[in-house]
Amino acid sequence: MSENTYRPGLEGIIATETALSYLDVDQEQIVIRGYDLIELANTVDYLKVAHLLMEGNLPSPSEYHQFTHSLAERQAVPDEIFAIMKALGPHPHLMDSLRTALSGLATFDTSLSRLDPQSTAEQAMTLLARMPVIVANSYHIKNHEAIVMPSPELPYAANFLAMITGTVPDDTEARAFDQLLTVYSEHEMPNSTFTAIVIASTLSDMYGALVGAVASLKGTLHGGANEAVMRMLLEMKTPDQVEPQLLAKLARKERIMGFGHRVYMKKPDPRAMLMKDSLKRLVTTKGHQELYDMCVIGETVMQREKGLYPNLDYYAAPVYYLLGVPIDLYTPIFFAARTAGLVAHVREQYGNNRLFRPRVRYTGPRNLHP
Ligand SMILES: CC(C)(COP(=O)(O)OP(=O)(O)OC[C@H]1O[C@@H](n2cnc3c(N)ncnc32)[C@H](O)[C@@H]1OP(=O)(O)O)[C@@H](O)C(=O)NCCC(=O)NCCS
Image (cartoon, rainbow, N blue to C red; front, side):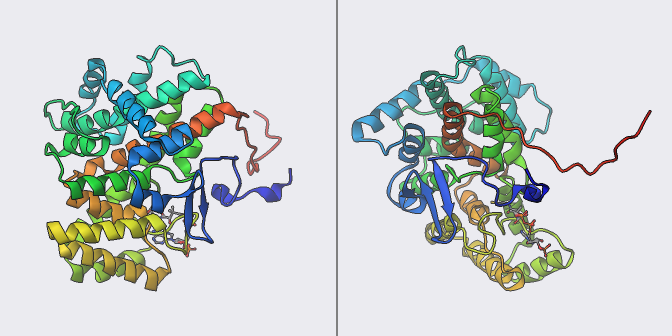
């Protein structure tokens, strides 16, 4: 292979084939198994999209019933996992709690080493079922609060939000949170998904692949951006501060979190626009118009100064905020939502595997002697 094929960050390199999703930048469309993600987010709920990703089709009513029933049956997280999370250091980043909990959970799955389609389908369901319980409780454990259990009466997304905030969300809140999970559910081949399939390609187990993906998604250039965006907005405080503070950051050559994207780069991220609409709706019922105004000013300034558009994390952050989600949980929730896409990619990798093992362009010395 020619050395010319090297591209820093593997930009534009086709790493694998997938039938799961594709970012069609020209058409400004995120394709999920043939459907448009934005249309899905506007018309069906997160679990239907999870079924689409994991099982290959949008569920019929009976398949949907079976899917939700099967998830509800698998929600119980072993007490030992909570004990492990409680034993962590005093100020854990919740992505580290999640990473550790997933590692621990692997040791309870007796099918761990089985990579056949039936076993991995069950592992995938268990992971999807338990993710909200682990994520919500990572926050409660960190804050020395009691462990919360899912309610058998509530649907998946409403349950997830209720376990976090302690209050059953109203329909508007539940819908906004469900839509947020949906837009985070799958996005082709970001760093975390690549990490997961690289790990899976050694025929390591699904839990290990997801543990690696958690570490990847934690970074601020990836999933960690949503928390950084909210901290930045809170620091700016008022709409009149947005422009001067952004200009000062840009003058210092700082990266502005929530802007830019390796694939979209100078085109809008359709998910961000959907979240912008969601934010607008939430503001009409919850107030905080100034938060919406700040975001819009930021968007205008970044477009004018850098030609950059907001990515999903930019508008997801204030949506989380208005839903009463603590900032520490923004990235873990992103991961929980992405579980549907990740397990589907890992299973696809097992089904058509070839070990990832690239080469390098060597830049060090040669022929040295001790
Ligand atoms: C997502 C991201 C890592 C993509 O990076 P990338 O494809 O490697 O792009 P590069 O880092 O090469 O950036 C290309 C140019 O755009 C600029 N740029 C990209 N994102 C920027 C941002 N958020 N703020 C300021 N400048 C940015 C870079 O400075 C660079 O400019 P230059 O050519 O004058 O040096 C990058 O846009 C970023 O850091 N964004 C902020 C973090 C974020 O929101 N991540 C969530 C992604 S969904």
